[in-house]
Amino acid sequence: MIFGHNETPIFEPVLDHVNCTFNKVICSGASTLIIHKDSIVLEQYIGKQSGGKGARAVQADTQFHVASVRKSYIGFAMSYALFYGYINSIDDKVLTYLPELDKNIWKDTTIRHLLTHTHGLKQGENGTVREFTPGSNWTYRQVGIDALTQIVKRTTNKSVADIIHESVFIPLGFNESNWYSKKHNKLVDVMLRYEGDEDWRTSDSTEGDKMNMYVSTRELAYWGYLHLKKGKINGKQIVPREIIDMATSLQSPSTIHKDLPQNGFLWFVKDLPATKTEIGHQVPKGSYQILGFTNVTLLVIPEKDIVAVRMFNSFGSPKGYDYLSDVRSFGDTVMKCAKNESTVSL
Picture (cartoon, rainbow, N blue to C red):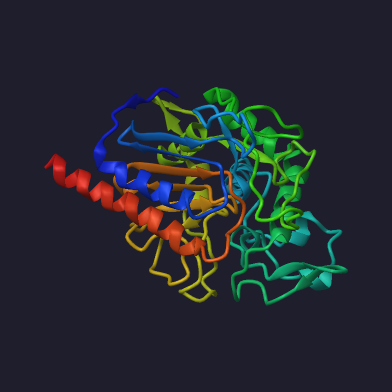
């Protein structure tokens, strides 16, 4: 992808916001990039890739650990499987595709429940246990993600990574987005909250099923731009529009409370006002966002033709840092700038 640069001071408050977060969390590097009306209007790189002496400066090809942002790629793979008929419906029971699972625990759990974090399952000491009836509540648990990646692999005979590479990375020439089993000099060091942080995981898998994905700032923005443009880049339909539409439209069951977060295919989507949403209150309906434990955030605002990215090499929230408030205010800051830009251009 080739974009013109039309950097404008109107979006500088977003950079100020990122710098402010940089000083609140435990990190050595950060970045931000905004695409607006097919041009890059803000692109800044901050700090170093690690806290070590002589560390490489954060730059355009630096790849950040994206944590749960990887789930947008899993959502894409599931949409791909549906579009091409490998899966019949997201309302199919999980047991249809993974019959070896415990039938008493998994009964009545559908693919929709997995995609929208409403499955009600968690990993206990002795295996998977049920927290609540499927579709009655919302909880962010890894067990649902693991089941989704297994369903993708079993139905398509391809891994999540295979599907993403074939459908997106190769056609668009992406070479700064991948799942890595080994470290190299363009990957950031993730700054843990404390030595031995039990939430931190590494993996040797390169199938797209584990938390070892690293992406550059620009390619994460391009991933968002592909969704913004419904899969059509430079006049060519790279990805069927229906795949993007399914992934980014509201899929949460109607049975959950209206104030709980709302999801598409793992993306957080903005629909009705919800008090527990992770998207800024000023961000309009139809927008969607994905975020990770490393404070990485990708926000797409179709109404304003905007893709906004922020990256950090932090991990989790230090004491006194309100992660949800910060990520909401990031989106609201982007929107404020977009409104100002509209006023200036009148």
